[in-house]
Image (tube, rainbow, N blue to C red; front, side):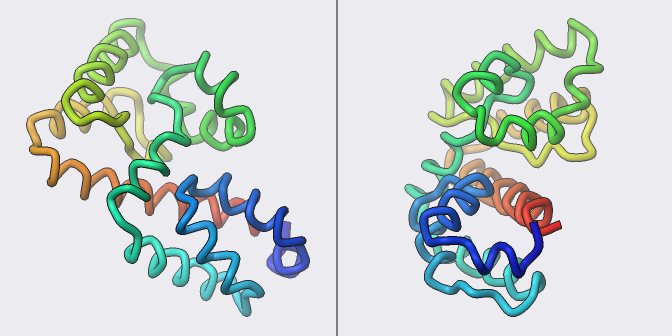
Length: 167
């Protein structure tokens, strides 16, 4: 849709569109309050600024709106409303070897057990091997460090999805 079309949405539709970009209710509510938007640049800058004002509980809420990297069943069921975006973002996983996919699954489990949330990475443009390497590099982090990194990855994902939304 265009920016003009986004600006013309009813509040409920606008809320739904923003939720597809980022699942943090506080962020979505703040974005809705600032509509209409004068430019795509303003929309993106506002999204970044408002995301920086959110709290760790908001970040964790946003993370629950993502499938695990490579979890095709999860993409199809729980995340049907964003599956088309997530599938494209994770398209490199489909080309990965069984060994890499199994290592991602094992790493995802270890990560979630350690940190209490799924591994969040802006997968766009990354191969499955690169994502696996990032997962392995981030596993030794402490919770505070990893939560901050995951928050920054969520911000990248949100920005890309907003750009897709208004393209």
